[in-house]
Length: 221
Image (tube, rainbow, N blue to C red; front, side, top):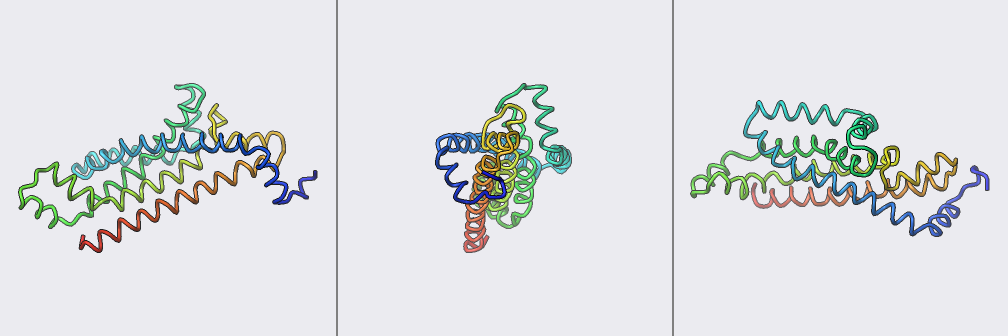
């Protein structure tokens, strides 16, 4: 079959015949993204909260995370590979580092955007600092935090496609197998699900973000 005669029927036929393998790659892809971004969320939100309380710390942390994010993804993964070796664990650490900046930055901005009158109202009814954080500041910052998570997830889905270059798994294996074998069917079979995954993640998290923002507006916050 010539490449210039490639059709959607050919692609669907190939994907149908290899659905088990492609599904396995997709699950590996999702697993790495969830783990890396999840770790960044667990670390990044508290960091963002601390940054909102200390501007000196904010400048240091935001600068470091920004530098990490602007590093070319392949260069970072190669550097991590020299330390951690080949495999998906290296990819997950890379995703963690790449995802920190949008989560920390948006948490910081969200905390700063909280109207001081709500904090004062919480203090007025006898809330402790922890209660104000958990019941006032964080709920009012959720839309911003969700925005950071949305950005991090979409970036991570793209970065994982180069995981096979350092021994990782995921849909990138199909893409690079297609490139090495000059087989466009394999390239598209890996690239299209990865692109759709990024689009779906962006849509779902975008809906959640808008819902949180709307709830804040309706509640007068």
